[in-house]
Length: 215
Image 1 (cartoon, rainbow, N blue to C red):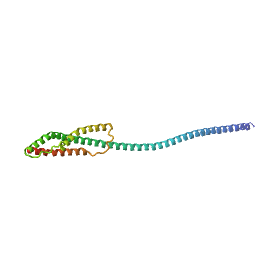
Image 2 (image 1 turned 30 degrees about the vertical axis):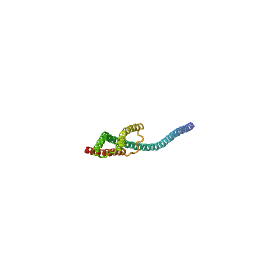
Image 3 (image 1 turned 90 degrees about the horizontal axis):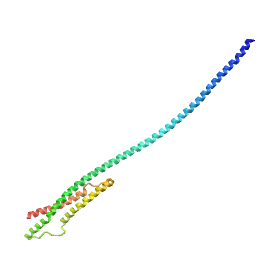
């Protein structure tokens, strides 16, 4: 009878031990489930954040490509303007050199015309004197001698052209060469004036030579 009682006492003890193990196992599972939920939430947050960053990087890459494309276009446009300015400055240098050379040539011709003009009237008087001695008709003595008037006009025009040239240089400096893109035929007006003055001089020289031969 005593052994039977000991066996009956051991059975409840074994059952309670099994219940405790099940409870501990259930608690562990609950802890794992809780930790799993937290980790899954953290993973989802990280995944969403990464996705947002990926989308942001994609958009920024597109924007950067557009910006770089625009920058390349601006650089090309700047280089085009730089080349255009370089050509304009080259044209300006050529124009200035041409004007300087033409002006020097014109000045030399006008100085020569002044010298010839001083000798013109005395030579003419000498010619008329000799023609009187030979009973020849005097040279036409018009007050408005075309050659003399033209020469005097060219001489007086020299100072006016010089003032205009100075004003033009000041104007170009003040406007920053804004209008220098207009193409102007180099040296044509000045060369034309030079040819006219040279022709006038060449007309006078043979007359003086013939007059000197008559003397």
